[in-house]
Amino acid sequence: MTAPAPYVYFPGNAREALSFYRDVFGGELELHTYAEFGREDGPADAVAHGYLTRGPVSLFASDAAPGEASLRSEGLVLALLQTAEPSTMHAWFDRLSDGGQVVDELQERPWGASDGQVVDRFGLHWLVGYEPEPAAPTRDAARGAPA
Picture 1 (cartoon, one colour):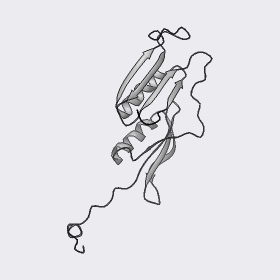
Picture 2: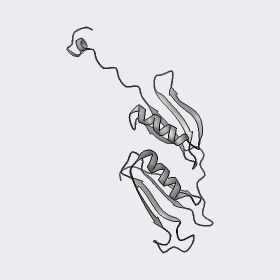
Picture 3: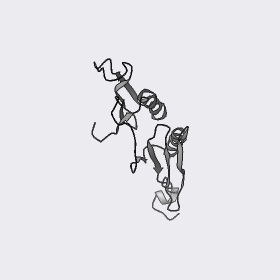
Picture 4: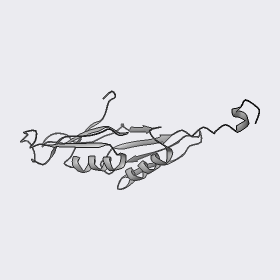
């Protein structure tokens, strides 16, 4: 892994959250329980360490142990910019919006780019956006002749 990836402590729903993100983005999901790690500070079937990798989004998570702080975020946005084709970006935005809260619809902006923001049902805030695709050159312009 060569880039930072979020590690989220969920309030007991890490399995559901990571499964949701796998369904949205694809990739490979691996989950390990408290019991597997020999932990006795929470339910045996709680997620002690889970990760989504090998897709466009890498995310690590676990269920917060009793007394441990769980996800609460202000001023942090996970940016998905130019990560996929526009149709895929719109599909991701729609899926993340399901059960979440749209902060700003994914739409074209006056400067030509498209973006939008959503807080998903698990509390993660996403910025989804892309630049317009460059116009294909006309046949004459491709040969160097005026169009």
